[in-house]
Each structure stands twice: as C-alpha cells, then as structure tokens.
Image 1: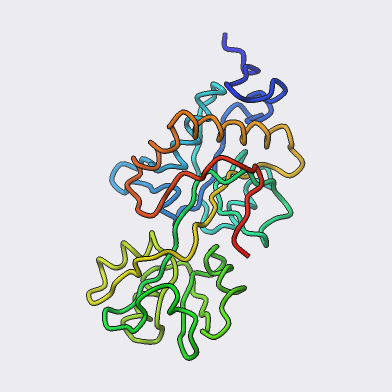
Image 2: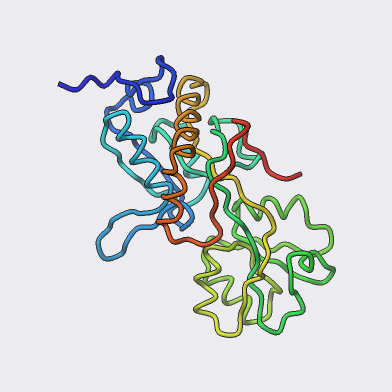
Length: 260
C-alpha cells in the first residue's frame, strides 16, 4: 500500500499529498485558450504543454493521479481554485487578480508583442503608444490589463478571447495592432500581409495558484518550482512545448511581480 502522506524532494515535511491533493487526485486547471500553458490535441484529446508537464510532475512526486481541466478565461482558473473545484491552477500573475487565491513565484515568462499589417508604420513596441492608434487586446488577458494601466495616447479596444476577431479587425483596418504573441503568431500564418513585431513588451509572469490561506501548500509549490528549475525539468518542458517566446523564470523572490 502506498502512503499518500509521503513528501517530495525540497518540500517541507508538513506538506503532504493529503494537503496538496486532499481528494486523492491532483486537479489542475489551466487556461484552455493559452498555448503557452497547454493545448489539447484535437485528434487524440491529449493535453500537452509546459504547464501540463509541471502538473504531471507534481502529481508524480506526491504519488497521485493528475486531472487536467481547461478554463475559458483567467477568472475561470481563479474561481476553480478558490471554490475548491481544483487544487492548483496555472494563471498569469496580475495585481488585480489577487485576493481569493495565493500566487506562487513566477515559474515562466511569456514574452508579449503585437501583430500589425505589413505596411504599418509600427516597427517596434516603442511605436505602439501613439495618438490616433487603436490597439486590440483580449478582455481580461494579462497584457490587456497591463495596457490599461500603461497606454497614454493610443486607444485600447478590448475584444472577446477569439483570435479571429483580431484578424477581422486588423485586415479591415479597424485597429492598428493586436496584442499578445503566442496566439497571434499562429494567427499571422493565417493572415496574409501581417507581421509580428520583433521585440517584446514584457515577460508575463506565469504562476501556480493554490487556495487562499494555504501557506503550507504554497510553500510546497514554491519549493517544487525551485527544484524543477534547478534540475532542468522546467527548461525541458518549455522546449518540448514548441511554443515561441517562453523562458524559464530566474530563481529569486517567491513573490511574483509585473513591471510598474
């Protein structure tokens, strides 16, 4: 018989499988529309990606099966964890999302940029915030929330989380640029006459969230991230995902942050 109270390497002894996955299965929720986290193969139904690999590795270390569940938006990830419908969640840290869950340290940075038409005068990220320009971003996406705080001259247009809507607006010249990177890189291949800006606005911090008030579980997850970073597992998971613009976050503070 397997003892589910066993701990994994680098985690305080008071954090056990019973603490992290009290139902006997590690229920992990991720943003289903974000390929930087994970994607579901349409043919096989298999879920692959950096976040999926991390969830499976955590389950392996505490000797429990893993159930991966997609959410339609970041708030859905947060709600699943805060309500007890999931044990952990993968979501970008953003100050406005704090309150009902605990955020781990940053495990991965997702570089963000913009999609523009080939003939656009916008050549770099520095050209984005200019009077008269309209920039579209997905509603409640981390880069959109960031642009809400930072844009001083350009107008931000929030759209539903549907890349084809940005495609329609861009080709119709209703917007000057679309914000994001991973989703728009795919869209660029489907939108003749478009290009992705070569530089990055900033690296969006990806974190693992746990229920509010569970300091023991949060410490366990932070220790797990430290260990998979040091062992090279995290970097291998990122490389295996095949998604552009991803990098393992450097070791340091256990407190996630975004640029001011």
